[in-house]
Image: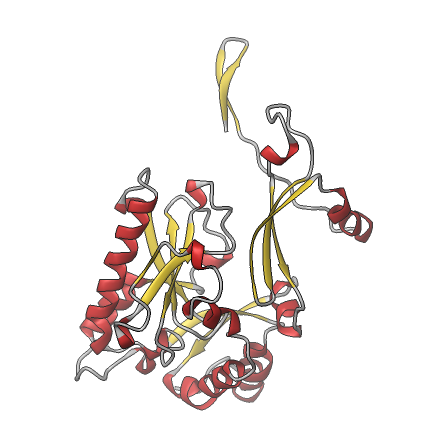
Length: 298
């Protein structure tokens, strides 16, 4: 945003990036047209870069100006292609029964396909060691160990786009569905440590400029928490039907009656899925064809 005057009258000029052209000729030539490319890191099949697509009058050297954040997945799978392809979206209701009978077996299948290798690499200290902002001493805290590092989608410079990732060491919690009342103190402890570490590492930020959430369905089935700047544009990944505030999860666990084993596997969850995703094509679309709705009859 630029503030100035036109004919002595105060004015605001708002600049936004237009969508990339979708023509094959443009997109095929784009990688070769980049002036500079800086490697930010790599882990398993994931690579990420900062790039310069054109000269900047204010930058003395091309490498001092980056206007593109580039993620590369190589080699990619059919699931990656489906995830990033344009597709319709559906709102579904996942009951405890659907989760237990259909979704949890699906999660297990995906976990056994080696798609979490990049997560294990981070947790075991094989990759991205220099990027870790905070971690409990590896292995010391057993089921309560965790670490914090920049998300691969952040350029690591723009504070209002801050996006960090909190990973837990334990491997038995795949998603928020595995959280129970007995985990409340652990979740609160992680939240406190993540906020402390973030504001210490980036002193220009204050606690009330951060929000923490988890995804459901998550992209990968190992429990993790997103820590972002409150001003980060709320796109699809932060929208209702995808992101659930960590504090809201804790509050829901607190209000559950019963013992410490009561948990998020006992509630209905409403969320969005892409029509090309296997969650839709293999689980909810067949349910809809059978019952007339993307859930089990009440």
